[in-house]
Structures are given as C-alpha cells and as structure tokens.
Length: 159
Image (cartoon, rainbow, N blue to C red; front, side, top):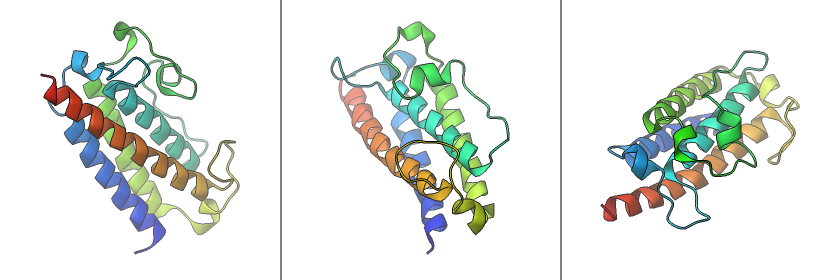
C-alpha cells in the first residue's frame, strides 16, 4: 500500500467515525462541552471540515472553495466559543465534512508526484510541501476524531 492509498483509507475511516459519533445527536447535544475549556462535538466537526477545505486548497490551488457561513471565524485557527445561535446545524457541518472527504479522496487518486512534492503556498506547521502538509492535516484530523468519539460517548451516557 502506498502513502496516498493509506491517506484515502484514513479519510474513509474518519468519515465513518464522525458519522457514527454524530448520528442521532441533537443540535443542543452537539453543543455540549464536557467542561468549560473543552470543545463541543459541533465545533470539532466544523474544525475538521475547515481543515479539509485547506486540504482541498492544497490539492487544487486556484479553484474556489465552498465554505460554511463564517467557517473560518467559527472553526479556524484561533476561533473561540460563540453563542449557540451562530453555529450552523450539525447535520450541515457533517455533510460538508463528508463531501470534502470524498473530494480529497478523488484528488489523491489524481495528484501528480510533481504537485505532491511542490512547495506549499500556505505557511503552517507540518512541512513545506503540499504532500507533507496534507499528511499533517490528516494526522491532525485523527486527533480530533478521537476527541469527537469521546464527547459523543459522554453525550450518550448523559441522556
């Protein structure tokens, strides 16, 4: 199995875990935070959708991105907890996350070695090439998927 195939399998795994973690969760439950400095299940899903858009930007530079309303402000670097009413519905966030995952899988099938090894136009941790940053973002995604699983378990046990 090559690295791109492994990343595709990781995306599929994360898609399944996020879908399962959010299945049957109400908007109010999705905003539950286990303690005052923890993130909610909804924020975690939005944060992952935001970073999947970053992967899309890396893999298909120059093409416009579809964004959730106030996506960067609500879920990007440095975002802070907002009042419940400003967040999009959980189901919209999850469907956006899943759709972006499918797009990334397709782009990974078609990415050229030249583009994968090219210098990234984005300056953030995880390396300087497109490929190293996509890999970093998908590893970062795994951490948040784990957090989502934990928060989902708490939500279900507190019902």
